[in-house]
Each structure stands twice: as C-alpha cells, then as structure tokens.
Image: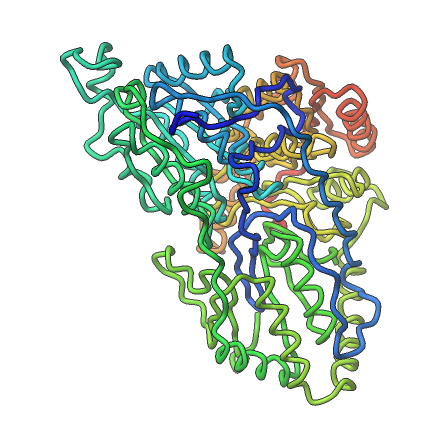
Length: 627
C-alpha cells in the first residue's frame, strides 16, 4: 500500500433522509474515539456541548432517600447501536488537494457536506465527481440555496447527534451570508467545520485554477477570515497541499474540544487543484482535548455552600444538552430537594413543569465566566470550570454529606413540590375554554396535543412552555442566546436529517420564518425527503422590537400607537402558498375552532404521506413575552 493510500469503504446508495453509515475505520483496531460530551449549565450552569448518544451509567445509590420525582421521570436508557458490518475496502489514492480534503473528511467521520457553491468550487466539484465514479466514501452533499439556512441545518444535525458536520460556501460573500448562523453556533458552542473558497491568488494562468473571471478581483479580501474571527474558535487559510491532513485534523480537534464551537478554513482554488502526494495517517494526527475538571478545593467549598443552604436554587438554560447532564441535574434536584428554573431554555433538563442579594452564586461550565463575551457582569461567588455532568455528580454527593439532616431536605422537598404544583396549575390553562381569538398561549396548548414521545420540537420564539408537557430531555430545542433570527427552519431540517424516524415540529414566529429563507428551506425539505411540520405563529408584528421600546419608554409616544414604528409586518404574506411551490401542504387558520383540525391534518400529512406541511396561524397582534 502506498504511504498516502487510505483504506475506505465503498460509497453505498442510500435514501437522503436515512442515517449515513458510520465513518470508515481507518485502521483495523484503531477506531477513532470521540470524547464524551459533557455540556450545559448548573446552579447557574451554562454548558457547551451537543447531545451525547452515549448511554449514561446507571443511577448510583444515593446517600439520602430519593422519593419518586415530581420533576422528571428517569429517561429510558438508549440502546447501544450494533457495530457496522464489515465491508470490503478499496484503495483511496488522492491526486489533488481537493480529493484529499473530501476523502479525509469522510475518513474522519464527517457525514454531510452542506454546500452553497461558486466559481471557487471547481476543484471540489471535479474531485467529488471522480470520487463518485471510483466509489470512494465521501460526505453526502446537501445543496443549500442560502448559506444561513445551511449553517442552521448543520447546527440542527449536531445538536441531535453531537457529531460535527462540514459546510462550504463561496469565498467572502458566502461567508458574509452565513455570519448570522455562525454567531448562533458560536454562542451555543456547536462544533461546525465551516469552510469557504478563497479567490484565486495568481493572475498569470501558469498555475491550474488561477484567476479567469472578473469577480476574482473584486471579491478578494485582505483578510477573509477577519470578518468572523471573533466568533470562531480557530481559523486558517490552507497554504499548501501537504497541509491538508494537519489542517483538517487540527480543525476538527479544536472544534470538538471544550468549550466546543465552529472553526473556519479558507481554501484557495489553486491549492485545491494542486497535486497531492503527501503521506497521511490512518488515524487523526490529534484528538480533542479532554474536558476540564473542577478544582477539588473549589468544588468542596461549593458543596459546603450547597449542603448548608436553606433555600438553594438551580438556574439553567442549556441543561438538557446531553442526557448525562440532564440526569445529573435530576439527581442533584432529587437528592437535595433543589428547585430548578429553566430560564429561556435552549434545552430542557427536567420535565416541564432571581436569588436574593445575600445568596451565594455558583457558576458551573467549561467556561463559567464566558470569556468570549465582551461584557457580562453577573455575580459569581464560585466559578467551577468543568464539564457539567461529572461536576454536578460530584457536587451533589459531596453536598449530601454537608447537609444538616435528611429531615431538612425532606421538608424542603415538600415545600418545593407544593409551590411547583400550584404554579403549574396557575400557569397551564389548557385548551378549554376556547378563546374568541387565537392567542400564542392557546396555540401552544393546542400544539401540546400533537406531541408524543417520538416528537421533537424546534422552537424559535413563539411557544409558551408553561402549556407544554415534555417529560424527557432531548426533545425540545430553543433558539440560540445570540438571537440570530432564521435559525429554526434550518435547524428543524437538520434535526430531521439526523432523526428520520422522529416527527419534527418547527414552531416559528412570522419574522423568524421569513429570516429562515423559506423558499430555500422548503426546496431542501422536498429534495432531501425531510418532512417537517412548520407552525407559524403569525401576529404580523416584530414583538421584541416594540417590547424593547415599551421597556425603555413605558409612557412614551410609541406606547400609545396601535401600529408602532419598526414593529409591524403588514400586510402579512400568505406563507401557506410558499410551501406549496415545493410540493408541501399549506393552509391558513384564523378562527379558533379551525385550529386543532388544521394541525391534525397537517401532522397526518407529515407522518403518513411523508410530505412537509405548514399551518399559518394568525394570532392576535400582541407584544406579550413568551417563555
């Protein structure tokens, strides 16, 4: 075997929506081990990692009685996937840098390449065509007609699987179009191998793929990576074909190391077209760094504070990012009778259902001080740097030993349970009686009737969580804290791509839907056979804009207006027509009595006919803050 020859499994035919086969094993007994994902936040925990597919260990015996949970039933353990059947290998012998880049991505476990091409793609197109002809194992291509939506799809796929995927766009202009989604991915700590072509460097034509189009002068940047460097964990421009393996392995290792995040690689056209003859390892040159662990002394101090606290409180937004972290939160809450608040959650840690000035505040996470945020002044008496799941597991066991008595814990448990149940009864109105107009809260109650244990909900703003019953982690996903609109539509398609056996519902505001590039999104849904139910909460308003104005000027001139400046979206488009252009089902609903039948029709079409569907729900024009 030549030094730069890699054994790869042959490319197999598969339906687009089906899960791709596992990345090929490069050495017979040297499988690539992904680091365990440990994400989220606790006791004010902010985490940084996508959901893990690794089943957690059994619940250890607690040191104090743990009655049946009023918070969340213990999730059923996931079944370990059976190992893939062995297949004959073929020899992959790249002759260009583009061929090596594509083949090595597949060899390193990248299953999908989300792509929005341009003139810089020529060597990549040729390499992929050659690979198809020779039956090489390559990443599956997903054509995305808008870059922002492509990033959202990659984000959605990774938040379900925990496995980073790749995207490539057209030079700087494509990078600019993707910035919104990349900011979301950065703030959510979602690993993505993001790449873009680079305007050809040479003008003479002496090198293959040199400049030959007028745009190659106007599109060039002095520093193409500069526009997004603030939000990337790492960026680099490929400068020679022999760097392919080093750059790719380094990019993936950095993206997957805690705190995780996107990386950016620019790929000049001449370099991609240049000859490749470098030796490549059958294993990655480097692996992700191990997750950080909390300092034992600080952890002991936190355990003393928690164990002796009379009214402890755990606040989280990302607690359900992994099953391990969700279970760790549940164990802590049950063992010490600690109430849990999901504040504007991106993930749910527990079943659905601000501290005083003298309280001690503990932050837990892989980056508990949010070092990449320019300004964040929240008090942290103890900041524990560590992966959330193991840190919480250690913390609650140590805190139990510090607690004055089991009797005190049980008294707190009863008080917390009573308050929680009373709050839930007060907040959850349900679907009866039927209102005169459709409100966002009533729409959420109706949506709740569509949910079952095999349904995933991707929410970009409209859902009122008090009306939802979601009992397991890993079924609810909310928009990123950066608030880049347009995430939900693409994220739902990425979630469906990752979980073809699940029903995926995307709950979107009308503004979020328009920002999501719906024409492009519905095209991908049809082309890739990804049926999703889109529910649009259409209030013909940008409510967040006017809420901000009212908060700043509660008795100002804008507060007196029915149609305040910068906050109206009228006349509202007929969104139900947009999906029909891509073979989907669409209908609009104005009357409350028509809502539930319309939602049930749409869900049946998604589940039985395997077609995408959209319900344009015209709700009252209001500025009420949702969950």
